[in-house]
Amino acid sequence: MHSFQQQQLAFINRIKDPSAPLPAGMRPERMAVYEELFFNNVQNFVSSAFPVLLSIVSAAHWQALCRQFFREQRLHSPYFLHISQAFLHWLPQVEEQLPLFALELAEYEWLELALATDIAMAASGWQFSPNSALALSPLARLCCYQYPVQQISVQFQPTAPAAQPVFLLLYRDHADQVRFLELNAWSAALLQLMLAEPGQQISTYLEWLQPYVPQWDSDQLLAEVTPLLTDFALRGIVTAAAEN
Image (cartoon, rainbow, N blue to C red):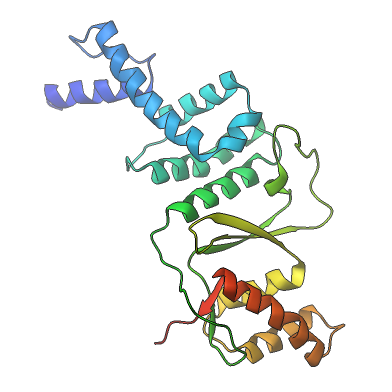
């Protein structure tokens, strides 16, 4: 390896780990400026992406986690969303150091950020009708958690999973605000069907949904689903399926 490459590698290793050997010819005080600058940028990106998780972890512990992440994770993009996503994917390696709900909370927070910065545009001005071919908006995410992540805060930190799965729909509205809706099991199943097989008419989705609600006949199921989909259409959650 050429001396320049060796010097460059030593510089990178020292940036990621201040306990690594100092690059040849580099003064400690000058190196410290680079170390602090790079680490602070990464830590700020991570902290801004996970504000609730940050609030329930001690400052010293959070800094140690960020330092460990910065040292261990190879980052391939300077974009803040990619850095926070890399942190999300790295977190399972330190799961035992965090509250039981931390991984689900982190995913929920990152999805909020991803939706807020997504450049996709939701369809506007579209009105739902029973004969429409339907699809879920690209600015919506369906989630299922063991913990009520939408309620977690400094004041509320669950110590055990919820009695029932927590179904959440995150979406970006027409005003570009990220919001969430808590769903029941059958409405979550309906949206999951739309995700799996977009472009079907409501009658097809109702046929597939029927086994999930055997207590309802077809007329009652239609009566329950129609106002729900109408509301979802107004919110921009459900849109007209793209034509092939």
